[in-house]
Image 1 (cartoon, rainbow, N blue to C red):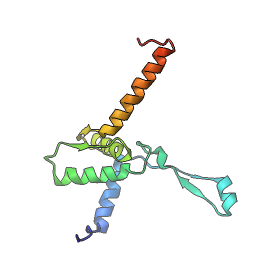
Image 2 (spheres, rainbow, N blue to C red):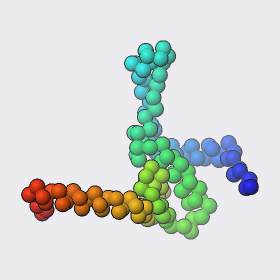
Image 3 (cartoon, rainbow, N blue to C red):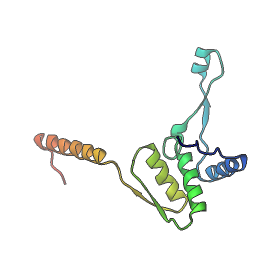
Image 4 (spheres, helix red, strand yellow):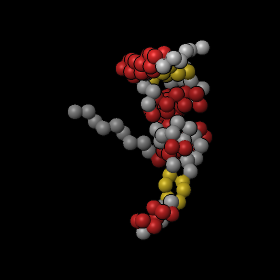
Length: 132
């Protein structure tokens, strides 16, 4: 059994917050009157879909790549094998922190996209559509 990773101290959390605030715009919060009335309390919703990638994970990518840039300045780029929220976080963070990125989506996703594209092309051709 492995030991759990060490938790960051307050200084590390403060440094991460400074970096995130420098790179990621603030996420808006809105009061929701209808929801507030329904539950009988004042409800505010933080809209994570308003981040640059549309998901909260962008902050984790910024902190990870910021740590990597500081601890290993010789590393000029990163590779991500996903195009999901995490992959978008890594891509955004790499661009914001001046690092190169290679994004390699999973083969099954590429295969599924190609199958869908060829099916749509076939259906369009049967319906008389042309390309170009």
